[in-house]
Length: 431
Image (tube, rainbow, N blue to C red; front, side):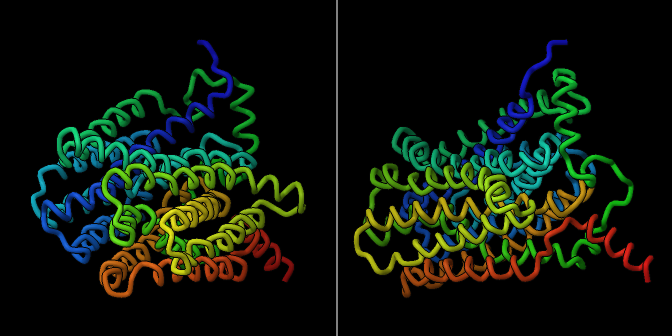
């Protein structure tokens, strides 16, 4: 059997492609929003209900999807959810009102809840600890690539055919990827094309909680009772409204605040996502850099990335101080870079803190916290954007991220749960 050198990078490329297509299906609604609002006579508040339906179902399903992935495994579990979101995305083309769109998008959100937990689980299986943030950065880059592709693709589909065609194309592409995932993805222990040298490098470089398939799996209730969980969940709760706003509201913000038409939306709406791509990649390389320069451990290095991103999020918070649409786009580009830098660090922390048997469940629960906030903020934007304007809402996002950075330093301890438990047992034994 021919061995493939660097096979772990091919695996993360496959994960990244799934994230790209997942976020393409998610962002299709945002790019089509001006057309949908005109053709289906949808108000800004009704549009917020559509976004909230997606977010609410995504929120509810996060821990469920994480649990299913831990039970079924990464290969089968992720394929199941990917096929579901592909079908539901294509079915969005059948909607004829905001209510129909809300139902369809809610179903897509429920299926796509598995996307990030599955990507994190695959990263924890295929990468040693020192490379995991880089791997997460690369698969997380798919979220912004999907958002970057959506505006020009959707505008092209609308001009050439209809808004319905945009959802059909996204669904077909996702279904094709799900089939490829079933064919090509395998755990390192089952991958015959993986060299023994690389297998040893991967497994030998993982923390103890990822090297063994121990039977002591933490229950969801135990995870919720753990301080380390809240040290990740609360910052994610505070940070996620920014990403929800970037994905769902930028085209409509440009349309309403600056009068951009479909052509200008296609030209500019993808730019913040390009910088978000850079944030994913740079954010992945920063933790090992901080470890070398400052001599800090893995968890502290992630905290430093979160802090850097939170400070940079001040830039889009100042949009209200400027009248130029091009300055606004530039500030949103800084915000895209900032958020995806800190988001990758927050997502990766679940695999740093929790063991292999509960990492997807834990990530699903922290994701549930994040998407609860995103759902609520979508409703706030829908209620206030037409009266208060978007500027105060962007300022609020900057404040949320600063608070999240404060929380992560004060609540999250600098060791994985397994080490904290061992330390506690030693103290009890000495006592």
